[in-house]
Length: 315
Image (tube, rainbow, N blue to C red):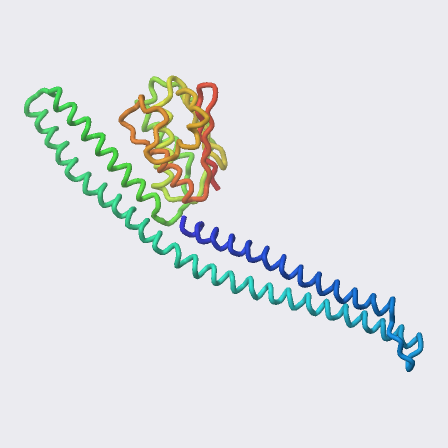
């Protein structure tokens, strides 16, 4: 992310510098060439009257003058090109230096924010796990689940899910070694693991065999888990899964997402339908997008005719 920001800053600076140099040097060269051509034409049209030179001598002098003007213009052009190249090189290094220094405070603040999310999520998980364990023990001893214990346990589970999501969101920014992963096997395993949740759905799957890509196994598993979980959660009856050589598509019939909502669907804590599935926090698709962007892949969403389709294109 910060590398992209730095590179964008450098590219903008280089583009502005190039345009300014091109306009300025073009004006200088055109002005100089026009002056020399005008001077040469004046000699041609109104040569100086010198009695020591005949007409042939004047023609030779005029040709030499024109050649000298042309050579001067060429020398000026070469000088301007060299000055322009040298200026571009200096601007590049200056831009690189200032860009790196400019984004350092942003990088530090971002790192602190990421560390806070990771630390807070970790600290939240410990007391939540202890509280849930106590509730399990209470329910076992009493032999019955009261209304209040059910409600409290449900809320604790929601907080636990939020803490886990925040921790996963922080982890997606980490740079981990990439290895070759068999995505075909991973998707098939995920479908098998979710058979119980899929029993009331009609699943149509087209999965090519031996589809592999360079990635981090944890990231790719989390990405497809989020997309499959989203499809299961929102679908009414149908889920379509397709894995091709360079793309993964998952479709559900959970309804049409309004066009104005589509650009926001990957935002953190955003939920298009807040009345349904209140146990969600709107972090899943944000995490998925972070994973995709980290790998320099692409994720697209399309929604029409009561169907929503997510497509991940990978390399």
